[in-house]
Image 1 (cartoon, rainbow, N blue to C red):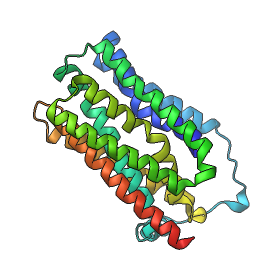
Image 2 (image 1 turned 45 degrees about the vertical axis):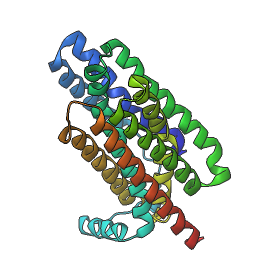
Image 3 (image 1 turned 60 degrees about the vertical axis):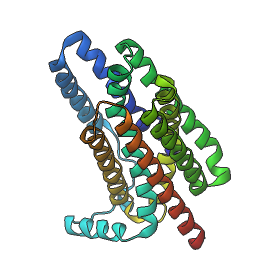
Length: 264
């Protein structure tokens, strides 16, 4: 179920820049903010119309202080943190891709803006394929193993990207191929890290999912910021951040798998 959900959640950060670029080209930068107003209003309307499916007898009424204590429990749990950080490192690499690929493709390799949209959009296809593959295989191999496979492939793609970005090996293709492989692992890494983190905390699923989201998107902010901080006029900062993010995701995935084996 999470794999199906993550198709939408994984596509959103990737398709956003494409839509934003078209709005910018057609109506100017101010129209982007008015579009956000419309999205916010539409979301609010959707929330007011969304029915509650959890019975009243099963709802948790935690106070704010108890919620904060719940976060403390989660942060001290090694298995929760291992799965959460596996997804967090991957999000750092994904957002580094979102932040760094426009410069790497358009400014450094002189890709026309129209072609950039196609190259960037290819990652969306990879995300969808990855989620569909995970949905079919996760019941056979388990979330921990699928997470390790996805993080391992992401780490390999990140290392390849670091090499091609630093040496300019393969030119544009040397960037596009490893980035496509990395982003395609969204389907294996994010859904399984999310499911693994929540597996032991069904009684506090709301707090757990909120904290996982904060870790993942917070890491994404750091990843995109690092690309800008280390910008040197080449694609090397993008390759370096994605490589470190992939390696970090793999280390955390292996940590989570070992903890799962001990528990099981």
